[in-house]
Image 1 (spheres, rainbow, N blue to C red):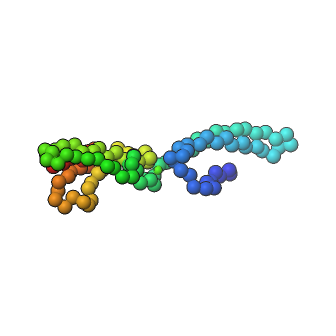
Image 2 (spheres, rainbow, N blue to C red):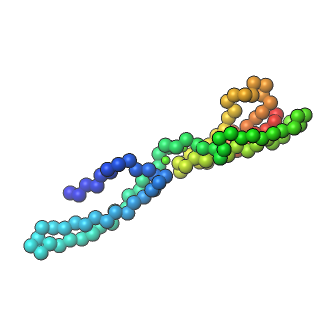
Image 3 (cartoon, rainbow, N blue to C red):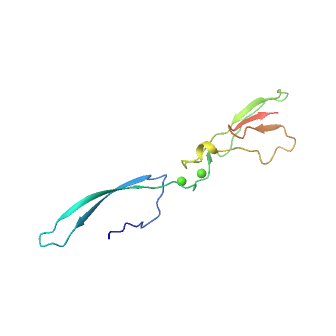
Length: 112
Ligand SMILES: [Ca+2]
Ligand SMILES: [Ca+2]
């Protein structure tokens, strides 16, 4: 039997699939052989955290600006196939008065 095993960690984000060619040969006096193609799909797991386009954003907003003024759109990217459209956003600190709101799906931050 010709068992194919991994020799190292594979990464779906680097190489999502492999085509291997395997050569099988017998031990006849005049050996006969054949080739077979093996397609290996590297399945994705969630092994990357989402990344924003900037580490820090510096938007500004006028004082006295009315409610629901859009301040910034935070955009994050996740290299994992499954997670990109499932990102959600939340303000975790700095907002004790509740002056700001972020749309959990779109990342749009509003003055509320
Ligand atoms: Ca991810
Ligand atoms: Ca992945």
